[in-house]
Image (cartoon, rainbow, N blue to C red; front, side, top):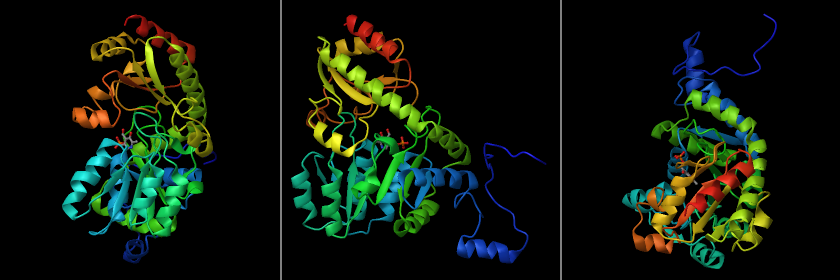
Length: 372
Ligand SMILES: Cc1ncc(COP(=O)(O)O)c(C=O)c1O
C-alpha cells in the first residue's frame, strides 16, 4: 500500500510474540527488541527519543507519573549509607520521599534553602553521594544557581539530579549546567493539555541502565496512550512556552502595579531576589507566577471565587490557566510554622498561565480583584 501514516500508531500491547525461542532469548539477554511493556514499548520509546533529543542527553525514560520518575531515579542512585543533600524548596511528594520514606533505609538527607549557595557548597564539601535540586521552585519561583552547585558535587564524585518541571526543556538547559539526571513531571508542560499523568528521566548512558532496571522492578513505567499524548504535547511545547513566558511577564507587570496586590513573585521582575540568576541561567522566565493579595484568607478566597476565565484547580503547565491558594491544597499538609518558614502566607495565590488571550486573563484578574 502506498502512503504511510504521518502519526505513529499507539502500541496498545502488553506483550510481544516471537517466531522462535532463540529470538526471545536474544531479547531477554541483550534487550535487542520488545518482550513485555513493563520493560519497553514502541510508543514509549518513540517519545523517549523525542525528549532525549530535546534535552541533549543520550537517553530518556518514560514513567507513569513525575513521582514515579523521581522515586525510581533517586532509588537507583542511592546506597544505604548515601549522603543526600537537597534544596529545601522541592515538590512535597519528593520531600516526603527523601525525609520520610528513605529514612527507613538509613538515608538521612540534609535540606538547605536553595538560595544559600555558599552553605550548600560547604555541606557538599563534607562528602555527598547525591545532590538533588529543583528550580524554579514551587510556589515562590526561587531560582537555584545550578552550575556552581553541580561543580562542587562533581568534585566529590556525586551525581546531580534536577527536577526541571517548572522550566521545561525550553527555558533551561540542564545539560550545559552540569546536571547528570533531569526529571520532568510530564503531567505539566510536556503533556501540556491537562490530560495525562506522566514523567520522564533524561540522562547519559552511564546512568540509564540502572534507572531502566529500577523502572522494571518498581514498575512505574509510562503507558502507551500517555506516551502518544506526551509526544503530541511535545510537538507544540516551544510554541506554548514562548507564549506563556510572554503572557506571564505581562500579567506579572500588571499585578505588580495593582494596589490590591502586596507582592508578586516572578523571576522576570527585577524585584525578584533571583532575577540575576534567572537571566544567566534561563532563556525564558516561565509561565508560573505567585502573588499575595492585600488581605486575609477570606479576602483571597473571595478573589479566587471571583475568577471566571482562570480555573480554580491544582496542577500547572497546560493550555488552560489554573490558579490555587497553596495553603488550601498543595501546601495544606504543612504545619503553620513550616508554612511560615517556606514563605507561604494565607493570601498567596499561585497562577499557571495558559495560552488564552492575555488581555482576557488580565481582565479576569482585574475583575476578581474588584470583588475583594
Ligand atoms: C515540580 C514538580 N515535580 C514533580 C511533581 C510530581 O509530578 P506528578 O504529579 O506527575 O507525579 C510535581 C507535581 O505537581 C511538581 O510540581
